[in-house]
Amino acid sequence: MGKIRVTVWNEYRHEREHDAVAAIYPHGIHEAIAAGLREHPDLQVRTATLDEPEHGLTQAVLDETDVLTWWGHKAHGEVSDEVVARVQRRVLAGMGLIALHSGHHSKIFKKLMGTTCSLRWREADERERVWVVSPGHPIAAGLDAHFEIQEAEMYGEFFDVPAPDELVFVSWFQGGNVFRSGACWRRGNGKIFYFRPGHETYPIYYMPVVRQVLANAVRWAAPTNGPAFPYLADAINETEPLEPLPEKRGDRERVG
Ligand code: ZN
Image (cartoon, rainbow, N blue to C red):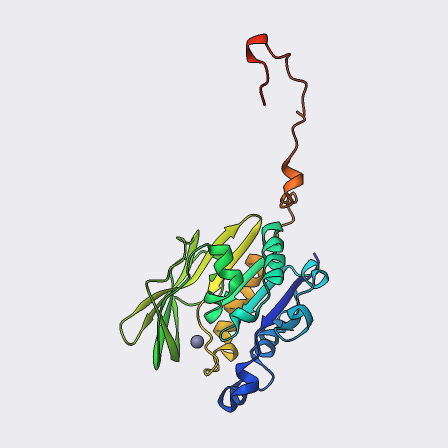
């Protein structure tokens, strides 16, 4: 079987503008995520960032991408609508999308969800305990019943997303909030996973357990190569039957 082709997308602004963030992610959040995925020989990993031409997401790149991971925060509005539409169409055709942390407010995630995707949040260096609530799910493979992040930004309910098709993680925070931290949806032929951990001022994407979750999620979200989803409107405008049909009776004349 061929390798799963992953494109790790990052806004890549905080790391270039804030020394405190650059100290944690000197080569950008995307390189930290990519390094974790490159530990797995079944994954072939490239990166793309906002300030590249077409945000690094040309049609050619997307055509060679099985799973796209998305980290953005302060510049969601600078992502062009044309690229967002291109990514959406590729998801409907079968590409997996993994939205990370503040990617909950990205244009592409909101477009695919159809809701505001807003949530409660607080930056107070809180402890987070992430519980596995679907132990048999492929994204939980190899994990313990729960894992902890010693310092995290809090995200709390209500998280305004459609009810997930599958819920894999629920987080508890020291300050008392809870959050659906790992959730799955399907749109068209594509699989979407949202994973909460990963604020830019915490070294969360170096944690082995987080890296395991991301590798698991990439494998889960990869296309399964079934029949091509007819995402071009023309392709579903087929009226010819596959078998001969009886003659229509006079009183059932076609009117359309
Ligand atoms: Zn954050």
